[in-house]
Image 1 (cartoon, rainbow, N blue to C red):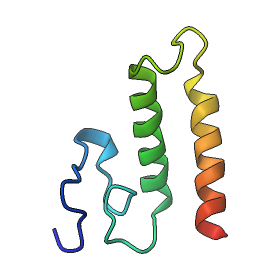
Image 2: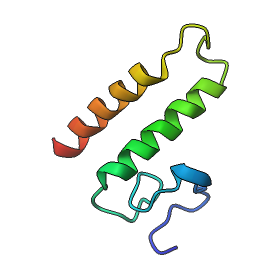
Image 3: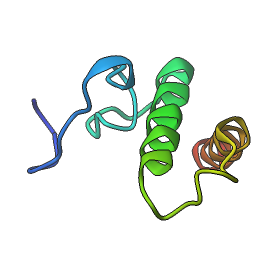
Image 4: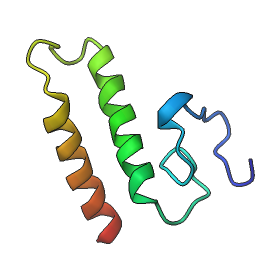
Length: 75
């Protein structure tokens, strides 16, 4: 894949939306790709032991990630 980061792995399944954060050669992110990437990150965080699963709210975390990413992209 041209412009890809060496050693970077693209996720499988719904998180692998074209134009997302997992395709570093893209300069603009599609909104659905951004949402998919945020959800993939939230799902990944949920599976780790870094966060207490009993108190973890996926919807709240996804909203926070999207709010942060939207601000980072739009400036």
